[in-house]
Image 1 (cartoon, one colour):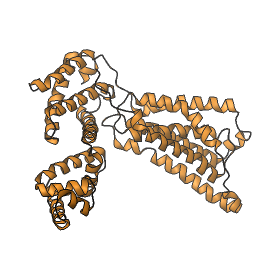
Image 2 (tube, each protein chain N blue to C red):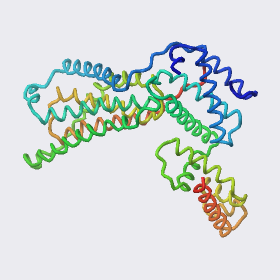
Image 3 (tube, helix red, strand yellow):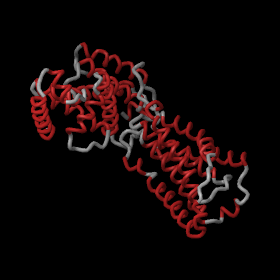
Image 4 (spheres, chains in turn brown, orange):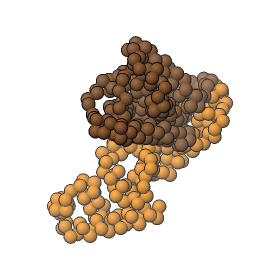
Amino acid sequence: MTEGGKDTQGTDALIARLAQQARPQRPLPHPAHRAMAWALVALTFGAAMVWAIGPRPDMAERLADARFLLEQGAALATGIAAAIAALSLTIPGASPLLRLLPAVPGALWLGTLSVGCLRDWWQLGAEGLRITPDPACFVYIALIGSLPWLVLYLMLRRGVPLAPRLTIALAALAAAGLGNFALRFFHTQDAALMVLLWQVGAVALLAALAGLAGRRLLYWPTRTV
Amino acid sequence: MKAAQAGDTGAYARLLADVALRMRRLVRRRAPWLSPEDVEDLVQDILLSLHQARATWDPARPFLPWMVAIARARVADNARRYAKRAAIALEVSALAETFCDIPTNNTAEAVVNLMSVRTAMRDLTPAEKQAVELLRLREMSLNEAAEASGSTVAALKVAMHRAMRKMKARLRKD
């Protein structure tokens, strides 16, 4: 079948070996379906963490606050959209539009927080824009996002590393986004600028750092077959 | 591929052989400077990647775009390693950016540009090639390059100017 010659003998042998190894294989479900399964695991873990640390005392009040719900909805949607985008990046020939999916909820998330900053400034003046150190956000987001990230990473390994850095960065965005979503159920920090700086900033930083390790984490198979 | 996913080893072997044939032609056409061993290495990398990725093919979607996406990524990856082996990866990428007017939107295109630059350099005279190598690849100053080549600054400037013009014309033509 292949062009003859000494050079192609190795390739012919490889084809024979690969064909021998071919077992019936079920195609992977659509990235959206896989992302939903992942989100279920991530949210369960997040809920367990909220329960373990203890929910915030004003939870009932927050759940009736439209601004809080909008910010949380956008954070959740960004995380899930980033997971869909990451998973789609490991599927050859998948629609390139899927990788842009997090842009819409991400813009909504940043938009609601930016509007929140303006509102805080309007209502409270300079006090509404006061910045105080809150490094615990980074630690909590990293902690709550750790297991979901690991699960998503294992799911990504079932695909192919077409764009490893972007894929891993999106996976970290997904995990950290859901980590931030859970964080706000026990962390009583609602000042928009503080959330934007310490929480969204932590999510962005984690995504960027993970992206740098992309090529080490997702790589093509070596010729050991 | 559908039969291969169902475990039909005969159909899978035929598919891989056909893919190997097409990929070998594609690689030879795209990278004529590769040795036959390097071409086979690349074809085998593509086959192995396709094998590892076969669960990612959705029978409801066409096979060709799926296979091409894998092949493009592998060619890009291999070109990166090839360039690294030749120890000129960064320099040639910089050349590709310098000489190509077309903006790249992905690695595969960058690699095609890189390959085009290497092809375009073939049209240069030895003096022009030397000028490009010393001034662009080795990033020497005009004085350093003149000293290294035993030429003059003026002659190097002329050679570099002519090399740039020839390479741009070749890249536009391609």
